[in-house]
Image 1 (cartoon, helix red, strand yellow):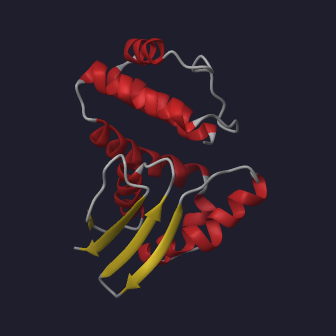
Image 2 (cartoon, helix red, strand yellow; image 1 turned 30 degrees about the vertical axis):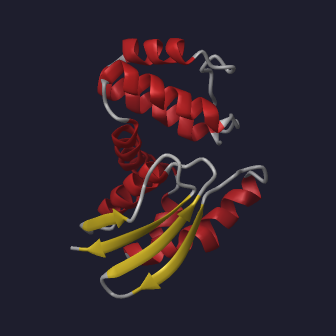
Image 3 (tube, helix red, strand yellow; image 1 turned 90 degrees about the horizontal axis):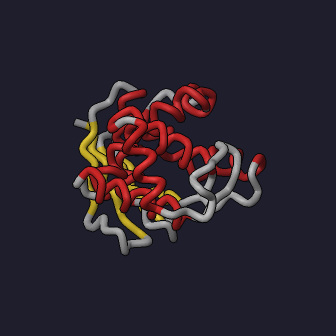
Length: 179
């Protein structure tokens, strides 16, 4: 898993709960890396899950809520750091469609070892997009937050629903409706 997810997660936790919570979370997680991340490094996704579980324990916030809220926050970072990906699309649905066919191809050019989730477009109308998310890391709540946060960039209000979004699901089908 790319380090930017880890570094931004630590920033997210610090902003919401403070540095003491970050320190406690890192200590409770007992990570092989020691919690020393760089944005361009690669780290085991299990460490990210450990951090989320430790934060859940520290704050009594369910992991699903943590991941969802982090996804919204992460979308802001992506807009700031990777504006060119966003600027090339004039419509929110066009952007979501470009994730698999354009953005991930560009990411793989820079980071051939990147293990990216897949986003398969199953249906598109003017008001609805159905996307199948697949990832062995099972971070559907993070993807849901990213969908919602990205919509804000395009000045769209969306309702994101899934048939299932549980930590054990590798594949989740999302229905995104413009509202």
